Image (cartoon, rainbow over all chains, first blue to last red; front, top):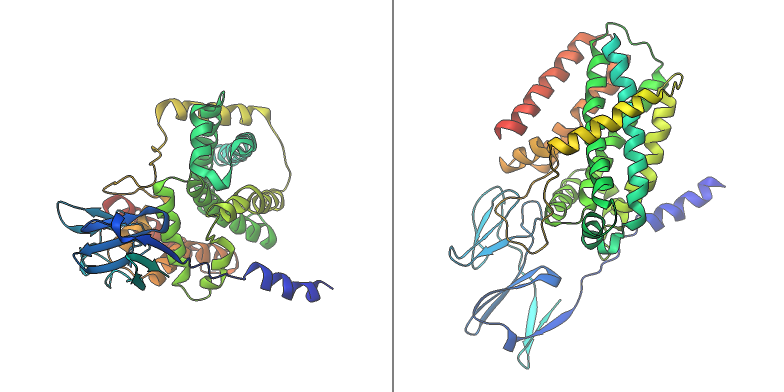
Length: 113
Length: 269
């Protein structure tokens, strides 16, 4: 009896739902430079028409990065990995650049997800 | 010998103080608004700060006295326990470390968030352990699973492990008095780490003291797998200690691990 229930119970407990959200942001609210979207843990880099969206989690152990305007760098508060404003790794234990998020721009809106 | 018994009973006393104070503050803790509820306990509720600090410091001293208890038992030439009791002890020790870590995460501040992210990635990048990832990770209600583990599964597991570990339970009121006294004295001497609001820009985040060594290894670009191996090594050594005939070798390895981990924690490698 326990064996019969164990399988569905394990499937239920270990089920991992993909909760990647889709949302949009008006480009009018985004100034040139770096804008942090706290709710979704994203950084938006805008330079004129060029736009990039980065995951705000460090590619090393996943801590939320800080952006330092004066240094023009993202720095991880956990293990101090450094990234340039366009997401390239400079130093620290992270082994790769920041993760880019796919997006599209329509009617001056930034659709993410 | 007397010191060893004193530490054992004091550890048990601290366990009950930690559980009792936890039972009080859980009434005002809400996992969906973790940080706000912790601040409300600390600043708004009558005696909230006292009970939060009592829970924190009794748990911290409990972990330290537990480590001393293990040390004293290993110093003895003969193990005066059964294999079942020994195995439950190791299980209880693992439960204590996860309890301490989940308690750190449940305060819901920026350092808790960082520690949880690091732990998730350590689990996710390690074979076998990654299968356990859904048991801890929450997407929407971030602190809910940690909450369930912290207030239900782990205390039950630890309570059962202690019940199976001790031969006879001699509850002595003086040890509870000493445990409360030690917790209150520690509260007056030391202060709890400050809670950092999410979104605040801080240079460095702190992790629980027993993970400092692991954090410093990660800082030195050790892979998550090798850090996890370093973390589980003492538990494996303790499990095989009971059954092995090379007890002095295992004791020496445990001491070597302890010295290296302390070095990693304090010196930053």
